[in-house]
Image 1 (tube, rainbow, N blue to C red):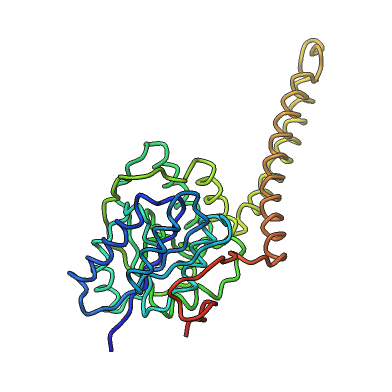
Image 2: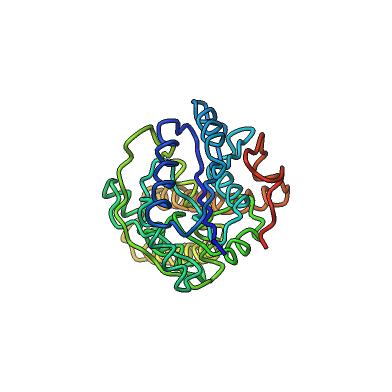
Length: 322
């Protein structure tokens, strides 16, 4: 029986890349994976350019192209998770970026390792075209996530991963208001192996990513799987309290041993204490606020995505993985 591979490609204003991405996948399966069938799922996040028209044309030309059109832009995390809900293959490429910075050429290697028994085959970006500062921030983030949780997120791994149908079923059981896919996959705990590759530079179009979005994703990744930041808040509060008592004792001793009165007494201490403790309080109020915001969003149970239209799917609603 022919096995099917699902490829999920989220889109937002990718009119310059969509057809190239489709052709790259088509040619790869024709040349390197002729014994496999595939479906290429494009999930468009209400693009403002001609992406929708191009997707409709591709879906009309090739029934292996399936399209999910969102009613508005629900953000990349929601769009990606919903796209994977629509995958029906024996294995799924969680995300193949439309700009092809993650090379489609290594998909055959992923399929080979999957056939050898790996439930998860993740790509490791060995060479990113970005600043030294951003690379260091990424390295620190991966160390924080791995150090604060009871599972390991491989450094340099993104959502460019092949996962078995069993893993996809486990992933979709997570009812997360802001699904962090690479963390969810790692949390499932299945046998995983990696393939290292050089990330390609973006050739066409403009990336919708920015510094705020990266920060937002990093904070979400941390609070989704660990309560360590809250524990750090408690520990830091206790530490500051102890240091304050010790400093108060030091001030009393210094006052008693000084030849004359300190003028004006306590002024510097008060100023430093106010600014220091105020900064600590604001920081951990922010940490607490992130958790409260996460709880607030989770309990409201809003849909991740509202679909406007589905093209080339057998039904109007996503199938539950079996």
